[in-house]
Length: 402
View 1 (cartoon, rainbow, N blue to C red):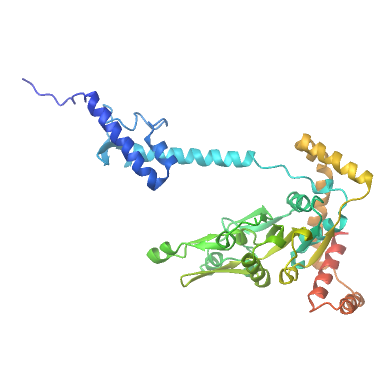
View 2: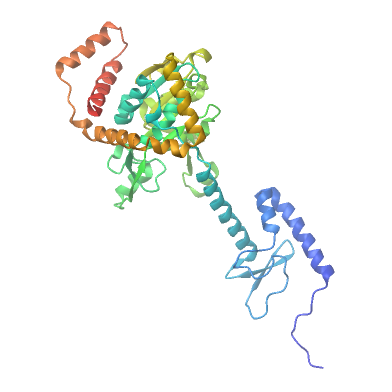
């Protein structure tokens, strides 16, 4: 009799047994990789690169496949990668793309800054800080429902673009060594060319329930000890560098987070230390806070870090109240149409801000005006000279925008 090398068909009982083992392997993987990942791995491949389900035990005739064994189950491989690996990779890529698409679609439309009725003092303080970030931020206190959070978040559309080093998590300025992260400084010392891109100024929300690690960032101690690399996961302060850090209900913020903000606002740097490993990065941001004084007083140490203060009250004029209600109803009914109706005013204001930032350095204050500012601060018994400095900066920014 002539022997043949043809593979004999595998009984159904064996295939069922292998499937059972694969499911058991999936259960074991769930504890390590996470339940959703293991579930995706246990499904048959449906990607174009797959020619057969993952539980197939026989290679396709005419194709060269190897074989790897996972928990006693033979998984065919191609080009050095198992179909199991390809399945996980494809699923992960698909999930990431869907998440990015969902995130983009779920972004809430922002109420236009130009559509804010009244509250001129608050709006002026915000605009002056955007023109000159060195003013030191603004603290907004007032009754609930007066549009504090809405006005602050509406600044997003007006924020100008700045130059940043591409791929840098700290938004380093390629023209200012003092605002660069350590990695960018090392690249410059090595003579490496920096890729520069234009991006809008960030506005970062600091939630009341945020942990210190989320705000400051974390260090991967295991990676640092095993690989000798300072693996740093940047926090909100890193993202807010050269941008705006907004704290709603700042008077209710935990004391330990207040101390973190005080240190970073005073020095312009954030330092994270874990197990003898220290990492510092620039954290220069415009600090904007809002709150209701009825819910709690603001710590004097934090209040001193705000360059300007705006008191917001409830609008009492009946006509203005009706206008606010009608405008809000229009926005809720059709946000896109409402935003389009203010597009011209928004662009005009954005151009004013950009022009004011460009000409700010050329604005000069007469000596007599400086003397008057200092006299007013002295008569008001203002502690220190911070009031004099902030008032001079705010006056220059006001002259620039006008």
